[in-house]
Length: 323
Image 1 (tube, one colour):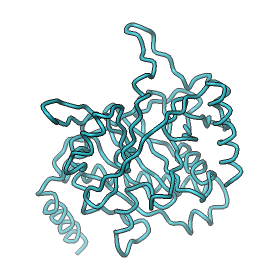
Image 2 (cartoon, helix red, strand yellow; image 1 turned 120 degrees about the vertical axis):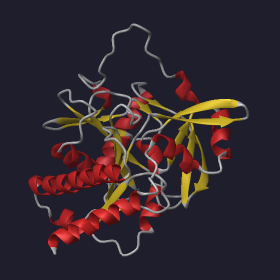
Image 3 (cartoon, one colour; image 1 turned 135 degrees about the vertical axis):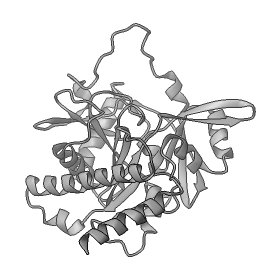
Image 4 (cartoon, helix red, strand yellow; image 1 turned 180 degrees about the vertical axis):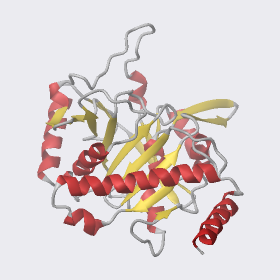
């Protein structure tokens, strides 16, 4: 266990003991869909989270945060424990000054988040994620990247990594789409050699920013080729191996089951393969679905069948221009 993870664990236990933090008990089940083993977490206590009273003034929990939740204070960011923790040691990398969650992560946001991800150590898989925009599943308007550690006793985590590993002959810096995912997305391998060779903050910041804004451009290109209006909402996933972006069309997926309708809020973790429900009935609904990918496609952007031809035509035009 890394020294940083030990610090986080100690702070987490203390905040839980003092009740400055709420750690929820969960029941987890797995379900396979399109080659990915989803983990579905049932957290009944989420129904007991305090709800904002109608007409009450909205407060920003990230300005002047509870000291019991502060892990580290940086130049422009604060690393906090998530007050409502479904996953133990759930961290938030929050801008000190208010920045909009609808803005993309800037180079320094990427650097600090990646550093936290790496500082947690390699004894368990770690994942950073960012919900950008109104349709992304974001719950707070103040910009924050989230970082979690995942158990690895049930195989490769997060579940999306299994599909990433099936991309054969991957090339560093090349942007890919995974055939088994029925919605628009882009994914790119990070160069471990460059990351290890980055001896100062500036080098690593420049590299991460170059990779992120490269796949952001690629995401918008995919949307154009799928004849989809440009969306400002998307989910961002980052491990020490890859970055991934998924554009969003809406915040909530609806499932009809046994004569009822059930709404599920979808955020970045769902696209990593980690789904959340609040009641036993919701768990039964998700387990009964033949294809959980359909749930994600509802809130993402489905591939246009003509997209492959549009991309081929674009490449042909580019090649003709170079001839």
